Length: 445
Image 1 (spheres, rainbow, N blue to C red):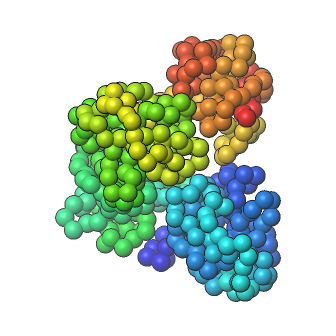
Image 2 (spheres, helix red, strand yellow):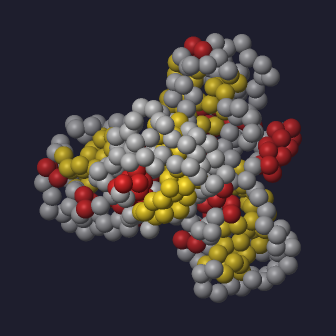
Image 3 (cartoon, one colour):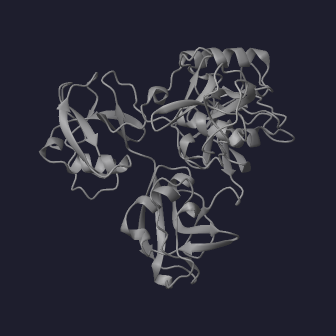
């Protein structure tokens, strides 16, 4: 955050001290931050990595920004800034950790088997939360590259829409916002009406800022609800290995379309051979597009040019990393139509805190961005609903039991056949008659 002015830097760092992402304490995380004395830290500290239950410091040899961002994402933040040459007081290291940025965890990055590092070759890492996001008309956060731009001043402040005043001309705010959200640039932006007149006004960036909140802005606003900023972010083709087209082969934005993959320098359609045998390939492709999960069906493509037998384990960060055959025997009737979704389920602890990367917890479901607990009425008749929820979370199956919840906000009478892709697709009642003892606790495997 070298480009932040001192005011905003102090304010944001103070907010991060108060904010503890739930994944920071996750037993599945392979990255953590510690003090010089080895005490666990929240958002800034010396970087350690865990391999086979053994924690060691990360050596600065070959460590780059991609590794810093990956480690911070694994700990529940969005990106990080690192400094090499930090003193750690010990010579207990993982060395030459070389990340591309597409790995799922820090421990997935290639590294050497031994090390030649000294006690002053540690990595000091500071992690940050984003100050920009895309939403729908009502201000609900959405995934994907298009939406209305909102900003927040620090981790605990309210999100507000960004006003179009001063947004054009030589202003680089649209590019800064897209880069902060993980894209490469802003393809286009325009002015549209939003549901609220709560704005950040006259946001002006020089293009060197890492975060939108580091850009200059006025303290108040004189904007109306007709002055919202609608933004379309994009990535360079060298960054992403998947894209969606319509039935004619024209590129589309959004969450549904014919799936194409970039292998080497050529875009081709993905053939349904093997790809349609499970959800692992669709999920990998949709995660690369900025969503959580995917559903596919076989369709006709406008021409015969395919990548065949794309077999994903589900842990790949790019579809192009999945093994495939070098040739193909596909016809135009074997294309893949992909529809991507954000997850409709999550697991929380008994106090309501969201659990990251957990296999068990109280089950919540989202409908229209409203999270509520799942009631055990009908849900406890079988494991169909638990299986759907666990598959949506990336597991194979699940079991359920009744449990107490900290509030009485419920979705009731959820009755799944077991074949649904999302729990939100299962039929349910429009109201509920559930008490706090009628929650659902699921365990996935």
